Amino acid sequence: MFRSLLVPLDGSTMAEQAVSPAAEISCRLGSSLTLAVVHPSGPLEEAPFPGTGPDERLRAAESAYLEALGLRTLASFRIPADVCLLGGDVVPSLVACAEEREADLVFVCAGGNPAIFDDKSVFAWLRRLARKGVTIGGISGGPYVLAKAGLLDQRRATLHWEHLPASREAFPNVTVVPSLFEIDGNRITCSGGISALDMMVAIIEKKHGRQLAASVGDWFLHTHVREGFGPQRMDLRYRLGVADEKLLSVLRAMEMSIETPQPRAELARQAGISLRQLERLFHRHIGHGIHAHYRWLRLERARQLLRETTLPVLDVALATGFASASQFARAYGRAFGEPPSRTRLSH
Image (cartoon, rainbow, N blue to C red; front, side, top):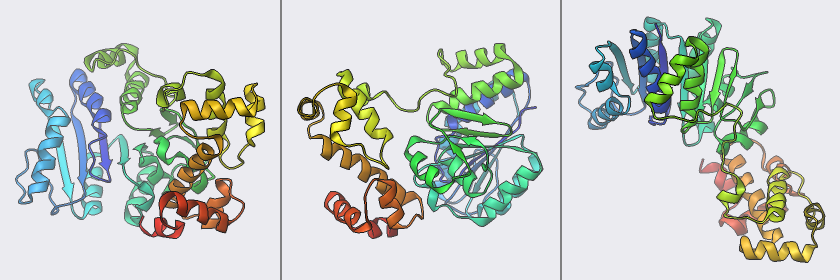
């Protein structure tokens, strides 16, 4: 029996990539798949697909999930699939659904800005599951929610690269790494996107062996299964369209030194060229100078921290290489047309 509980707190369908291999393994093992889908809008309902609820958005969500999760495939294999769609007041029904089905795996999925999610009842429910020994995972922004619930302390975890800086600042007791997925005991975290498929194949291999995992990968045309420690983002040469190795080495150094920016002369020295040559490379390939690019990197990081953490503005300024809050506020206002305080209030 392979029992899983999927909790997309934002109603997104990003987690279908994680669920589909679970459905496939259920088919191949001749067992049932238990799935809970949380939809945040619409009236409270608990019904099998296809739903008959009065809310049009809810029916649309049911239809989308039915197609995305491959339930027609399950039916063709004659495998019973219990599906519970929840909306509105999520937690009471979610708890009942979870306790009734005794899920082996619980995955929390979150897109957008997970830092604004602050439902104490959900945190309490997750902690209760953890005390029972349930394996708990997070996908994309989901690990941020798990960290807020205190479930990743002293653990190694990953999440979507957009949330990495904020997570490192907000959760010093969590070892946050930029990998595709991490399995640390009974905590599983994943950066999202197609890496959820890599993660599920790894879980299947660990639980049921390489042969079945390879079979599931083949079914999804996934011929190259990536290890969890792989990088999340494209190499800078593809992301920025830059081929010059000296420039690439400097760009990598800049991304790694946001809190303590390196002087331009030091960057040029590390690249083995003169400062004038390095400036020419920046203008030719990036479109502006060293200082402008470095400042933009730091301000983008600052905007992420303002949106996703509760750090004081001064701490955000210091974490992005600015000497004072006033200096930071002036640079931020010129770049984004609003003060840091307004960015925080809007999120």
